Picture 1 (cartoon, rainbow over the protein chains, first blue to last red):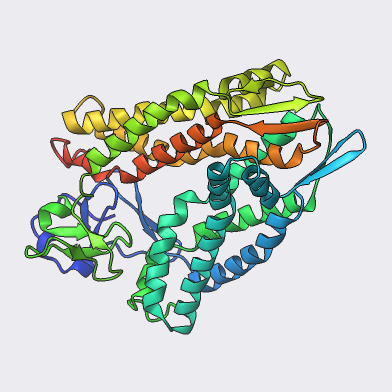
Picture 2: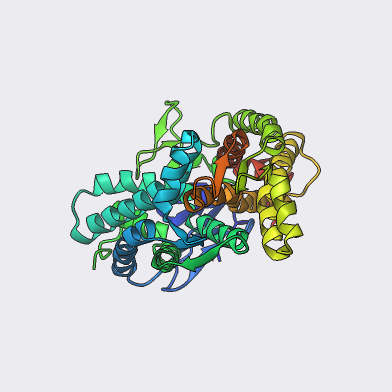
Length: 219
Length: 207
């Protein structure tokens, strides 16, 4: 870890040798990291950056897996409900439609954005960013899309939706017979892949690769 | 030493360092092209505005009913709190606890927590920087979970759809509740955590 107290010479060093904490603005000498290590801010504990192996290939594999799971997760039934011989199905999409048709357009748009649109846009941004790095084309669009991705990040709420499914199942359990559908398995798969992807795709390395500072990024 | 003292600005989007340019008001990041500021402009005022709006809407969100689950033509409108009470009465304590935490504790904690952060940044009181940064991170992390009730409503509306036999109706409270969650999330995004450390007397108090 670098020493933040040795401050006299810091402002004269070239920017490449410095790092500043995004959350508390502490300026430090940039530490050299080996693969698998990460640097934390000594003052507030924020993760400055991590250095991981094969970021691009591993992330690409995960993005594609997530995109494949996306359609079944959203359009296959999550659960089926039976009351007195009648049955109804629930998918993520039918939830959005149902709300829209009960004069709750505002809420239905929020649900649509948080559970379907933003998770998809995030994955597409990530896919495009990784492809521009891999094939070394269109980096400027890659930079823009990666910025968009960071703005969307907080608003995709798949894990909260999954908890919502659990609560709904418990609420309905004594009212009707419930069967869990294939959609739920795909949804959980999508959620796990996406969390894994967020861990693997270390932002610092992606930014460096996008700006061409790291010549071997696409390998 | 803070980056701002060395005339260095961190890009809020890609975390690249930029030397401060004295001539321009609107400096852009050399790497990603985003606007860079030493501190987010008007961070405190904007956060206060969002927070106060959220606090006002918080009242109808909790008082108005959010939905009615009716079976065989019977069923009363339920508010967020009465939904939790119903779960407790049915003996489903763990899930009641989850809903209680996500829908009642978290929004309340966020409103109070962000207000405390703003107060302590403006008045240099009464929490230590370390307490404040943990509070900020907790609020940022936990905020999204309040959407839980909204998703539950969406699922119930879709699945409980048997006409007169059983159906779910939504009410205005749901809109108010969703607005509170979104407004408090926006308030957490607008708040600049670097302000927390600006007001500590010494910036070497990390150990």
